[in-house]
Length: 297
Ligand code: G4P
Image (cartoon, rainbow, N blue to C red; front, top):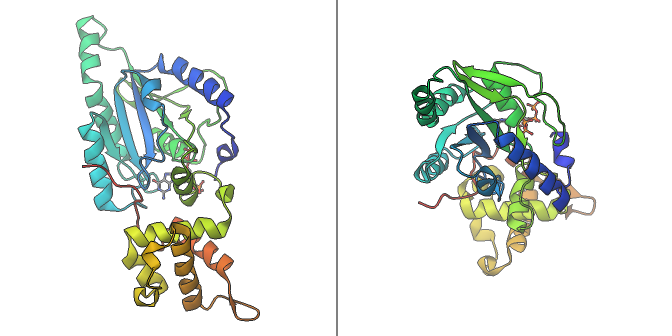
């Protein structure tokens, strides 16, 4: 977790960030937006299109090592169909990182041609990386720059001289990522951001957070839950599908706690412990590689 997660995105903060971003955008020819491939909608900033205007855009679907491969492909197709250049990356293993420069070159081919026509063939083209906290911006920039360890400057409101990373001959990337605010107002979005660790998970108590995750996974990937926690749908109550999402999730959490033998003194089920285990196993992909949002095809 990075310190950015602690930032409270008050309206004043958003306005300031937006102004800074708009100023930085004047310096660049393209905007590369990093999304978490597990939640490409919820990890998007809602105002990104308005902020970027007509700049050429790239979508970087990151954390593909944690996401459902078939759904990642569907998301890549979705964003391509909307006119974005798309790459898919796993910044931990560097998978997809070498696709960045060719994709950026293609995205900016027209601009380069226009420069050449004006006799400015050698003028470097510039891009910047943007995204909500914790999507992997800093890691991505470090990977592209071939750096290890050193964290790219990653705090909003910090003004310093602009530094550029050379991506390829004639291609520069702003060393400082643009940090956008996540959209919390929608409770479903807040849940997905908390499950994936993009925001602190104290937005809800652990048991409710885990119950809602259990329910969401049961809808999308029931087999994985059945296999890992030995859940048995025949043991679920008959009115199961009628129950509210967290109620269904609690029933499943109880079953999983029972199978794991998580008991409190007095033989009461330790749901708190099971909740922590579920969240940890989801976040570390022990349950599988899941994408919680579907691309419209
Ligand atoms: P940010 O600048 O957008 O805030 O994100 P940052 O690069 O700090 O990355 C946040 C966390 O996500 C880091 O983990 C980073 O290693 C991890 N991460 C980034 N890209 C990927 C990816 O493609 N796959 C996986 N599995 N993880 C990724 P951390 O726990 O904060 O640190 P550490 O475990 O790397 O030490």
